[in-house]
Length: 271
Ligand SMILES: NC(=O)c1ccc[n+]([C@@H]2O[C@H](COP(=O)([O-])OP(=O)(O)OC[C@H]3O[C@@H](n4cnc5c(N)ncnc54)[C@H](O)[C@@H]3O)[C@@H](O)[C@H]2O)c1
Image 1 (cartoon, rainbow, N blue to C red):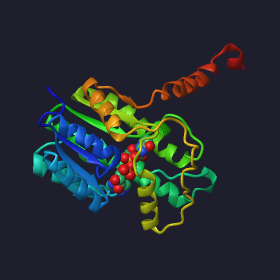
Image 2: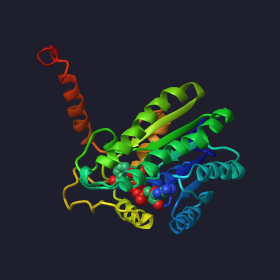
Image 3: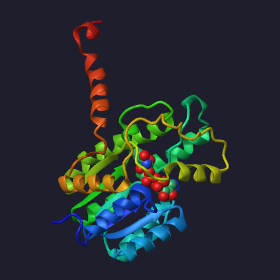
Image 4: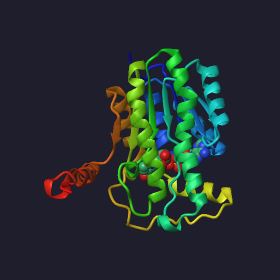
C-alpha cells in the first residue's frame, strides 16, 4: 500500500521550515494534512499556501509542551479525517551558547519543546494508531546534534540525544504493529529556526543565556528544506530508521564510532 496516497499526515512545527516542506512533499504524494504549530499566524499562512497548492489541509494551533493540547490535536485529526497514518513530531527550538552559561530556563524550555513535545506526540497518537490497525509511520525530528556532542549546543544536544534514544526504542517496539519509525537527524538546513527560537525565549520572559550563532562557525554545508523532505519521503518508503541529510555526516559518525571502538583495543582495554 502506498504510504502517502489518501493517508493522513500530522506535522508539528508545520508552519514553516522543515515541517512545512515535509507537509508539501507528503501532499505531493497524495496525503491529507494536519499542520500543527504554536504560531497561529504563520500556521494559517502555511495552511492557506498548501491548500492553494491543492492540498487538503487542516491547521490546528497546538502547543507541544502541553499534553492536553497535543491530545486535542489528535482529537481534531480523528474528527476531521478518522485516522492518523504519518505523525511527524518536528516542533523544536535551538538554544545556543556555552553550556556552563545556560540558565535553568534554557534547559527547561528546550526540554519542554524538543523532548517532551515528542513524548506528547507519541503518547497522543501511537496508541490510537495501533488501535486503528493500519500501517503507519512516526518521524521524530532530532538533529545531527542528537548523534554527536557539539560545542555550544550542549542543551540542544541533550534534548536531541533523548529524541534519538526514544525513537530507536520505538522503532523496535512498533515493528510488530506494522508502524515504521524514523529519526530525522539533519545538519544545517536553511530555515528561520534561530529567529523563531529567539521569539519563543522572549515570550517566556525567563532569564536566558542563549546567543546568536557565531558567523561562519557552524560546520557543514547548508541545504534547503525540500531536500530534507525528499529524504524523509524515501526513508518512509524504505522503513529506514535513521534519516541523515548531509554527506559530511558519514565521516563524523565514523570518527565517533572509531573512538568508541578504540576503547576495546588490547592496549586500552587491559586493566
Ligand atoms: N534548521 C536546521 O538547521 C535544523 C537542523 C537539525 C534539526 N533541526 C530541527 O528541525 C525541526 C524544525 O526546525 P526548522 O529548522 O524547520 O525551524 P522552524 O523554526 O521553521 O520550525 C520549528 C517550528 O516549531 C514551532 N514550535 C516551537 N515551539 C512550539 C511549541 N511549543 N508547540 C508547537 N510548535 C512549536 C515553531 O513555531 C516553528 O514553526 C526542529 O526540531 C529543529 O530542532 C533543524
